[in-house]
Every structure is written in structure tokens, then in C-alpha cells.
Amino acid sequence: MNDEREPLVWLDADACPVKREIYRVARRYDVPVTLVTNRWMRVPDEPWLELVVVKDEGQMDEADDWIAENTEPNDIVVTDDIVLASRCLKKGGRVVGSRGREFTPESIGEALATRELMADPREDGTVTGGPSAFSKRDRSEFLQ
Image (tube, rainbow, N blue to C red; front, side, top):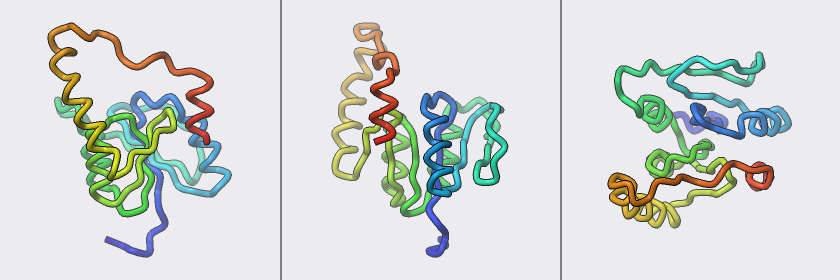
């Protein structure tokens, strides 16, 4: 691990609704951003922005695995995936969700437990909905 490396922003990009906001903040603070995805996507042509396409060899979590393996202390990871958030926190990363929720070592246990509790109702069809639609307020919360 290189202690002198500047923190990076890792973006779990496949379904991230705040890419434009991340670009704007990264440009303002001159912070490099790496978007990690399972498929190619169009990104602005900026020297501080990198797209990493992880070949999906039948595994749904390839991009998550890549982010978790490459996260170093103080890196910032933007994801709504609670399991990925937990993995990155264990490596010393900082994690924020697309709605502005910061995951911390103190809060991740509750988030994982809630996810586990909801697994059976989701699988048996009792719970069929997901999070509410992403709103302007969510965008604002993320930026704060």
C-alpha cells in the first residue's frame, strides 16, 4: 500500500444516478474519479476521469470485487451496495450512498442486518418494492 497516494473517488457506476454531480465536485476539488462498471458507458473526456470496464464473466459482482480490491485508506467510494460498502470500510475507505448517506464502521452493521432481514420477504415476494424514485431532494442531499 502506498501511503503517499492521494485519495481517489471510486464510483460503482452501473446504476449511479449522481454521476454528473460527482463530476462537478471532482472538477472543483481536482480529485481523480474512477468509474467502475460491467459495461462500457459514455463519460466526459477529462484527464481526472477514468472508466474501468470489468469483464463480467457470469458473475454479477465483478465490478464490486474490483472496487473492493483497489480501495485504499481514505479513498471515497460512492455506492448504494451495502455489502460493497462494508468491504470498502474494512479497507479504510470512506463510503457514501447516492442519496448522501454516509456509511461508517458504526452504522454498517445495522445496514447489513436490515438487508439480511429483508432478504427472505424479498425472495418470497412479500416485499416487492425497492427504494423510492430518485428525486431532486436526493440529489441535493448527496451534494451536501
